[in-house]
Amino acid sequence: MFLTEPILAILGLGIFLIGTVVGSFLNVCIYRIPWQKSVIWPSSRCPRCWSAIAARDNIPILSWIALRGECRHCGLPISPRYPLVEALVGLLFLGAYLVDVIDGPRGAWGHVPAFQLVAVAYHAMFLALLVAATFIDYDVMMIPDQITVTGMVLGVALGTIWPAVRPEPAAAGTHLQGFWVGLAGLLVGAGLVQAVRWIAGFLLRREAMGFGDVTLLGMIGAFLGWQAAVLTFFLAPFFGLAHAAWTMMAYWKKRLSGAQLSSADREIPFGPYLSMAAASLLFLWPWLWPGWARGLFGTLFVIFWWMLGVQVNLPN
Ligand SMILES: [Zn+2]
Image 1: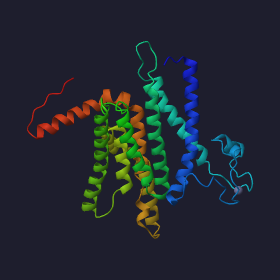
Image 2: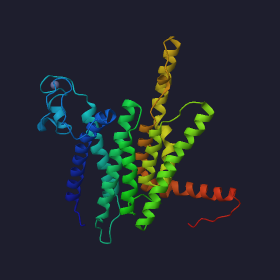
Image 3: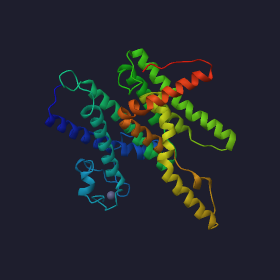
Image 4: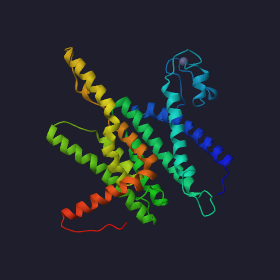
């Protein structure tokens, strides 16, 4: 497709707006899925006066500003988290568009390959699932299967239909390869968290991560391939450092004051940080993979075979 600059700008704005609408739907998912409620029916209502929210009061971001964060009928404050999630998803979608289309590969005459729009849709879907997992995990300390199992199926299926859509080196040439790459990513991601859970359970005699983290990293592997899943796992704790430090401080303050402690006082959710690490890798991958990660995995590959007594030489 030949896309001139004004069209590229309008397309970017459109993708941002689609993101805010998806964010609005994710707000419903985040609020309802933990309570096993339908996300389609009934329509949104004010939790206090029970009046249905009209279409004009349901416009992402703008309605919240127009209503100054209050229910039109009873004045109940509406959390600023709703417009913030809508803006966040809009920006994430825009980010995927910037990486895949604006900064993405160009065809022979400088045109944008139509396939890059498939890549935007694929990444946008992945980011939407990560946002839902993040906020639900913050709210209720668990990640529902509706998010992660759906994500695992989508990651494997879409990567089978469009085998080239996953980032290097997980991009595949044929549908069958695309299927195996997705399945390998799923198994490595899920297996890594499960292995650490077993080891921690054996050494510390308590649960280190939830089963939701197993399926979440499985989903990340299914979408991005096993290499990105492994990096996500080791990068995630850095994103969680501030939260962990803050939780430990609150824990010791409570402990020194002699208050009653529960195991929840030392717990932080891991899902949001897996999600943040995966989203960061997604955006930085075009630079990270050739600049650093390929060399890292090449070195690990050589060390692995060397330990088994096999000498391998990597092609450049
Ligand atoms: Zn109300």
